[in-house]
Length: 385
Image (cartoon, rainbow, N blue to C red; front, side, top):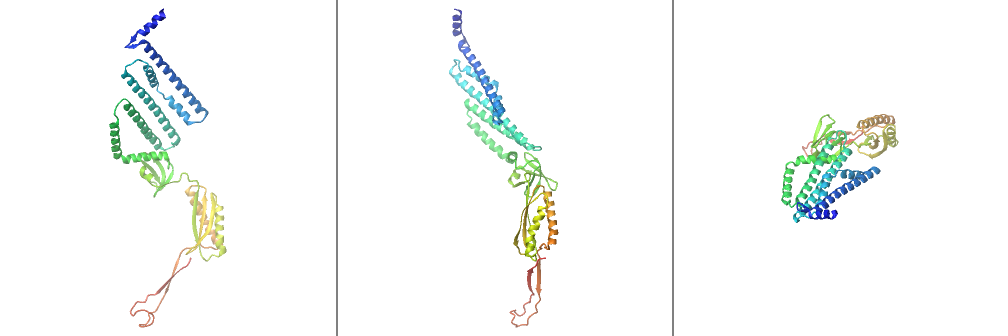
């Protein structure tokens, strides 16, 4: 009898115009929804963490970290909206509930996006940052700020559009304002994006030896706007990042070996046997030096002034000083060996022969007009010294 009376009381009692039984049902549904969402998030997070622990998968770890950033307040808001949807509310409140649903989901998506952007930027900095590369963290901060601004701009515009605000004029105003700002600071923005391109593409890093046009030196600082290079002469060269990327950059950091090609000539008085022995002598010299690998040596051509040879060898050490030391040793050894072989290096020379001539008599058959000056005949010939 008491149970029947309580049931009747619950059905007949109302609170703020809402039946008590309907209110109890809504609260129960909200509580159940909150608990269910938390359990699902816990299970998904644990499975993603176990997946990341079993296999070195960056995606699984990222999913676990993103899910861990779920807002409990927004989960509670969703649960309350589920319960409120069961209430007997006027028609205008149903529309408001739908808008609140969209706001809650959009905010949670934005928070997940913020978490993903932060994780991505942090992973990029850990992967690419090195000692002295200050532009990596600066460019990462710039990239993070730009991505987060874009994310929340999209979320805000979506929320405003859902609640009935006309965002067409607002988007047009943002476009015009953005174009005006971009035109005003286009040089600065160009250098900033160039810095970002350097950080991402990494054509060079701090400590690399590079050659850009007539500038060669070691990169000291890569900033947001400029790059500073310590030249071989000792001064610091400051170059705009935009202008730097417009040029061809030779980076010697990854240089492991040097391929050297050089040529020389010997005089024409060398016998065929001596000319044939020259490549073998050069090969013996190169193979006898450490850190060198012989490639080839040939009599390339019979030139206008000498027998022309071409030699190719590989320096196993990338150091420029090592290459110059080895080339000097080759040159000195060639001087000694060629002297012993009886072969001389050719130097281009020109011998001028001047023949004297007497003035012919007037009316002679020399073909010279009367009164014309008589010039000496000049002949040229080339001889090798």
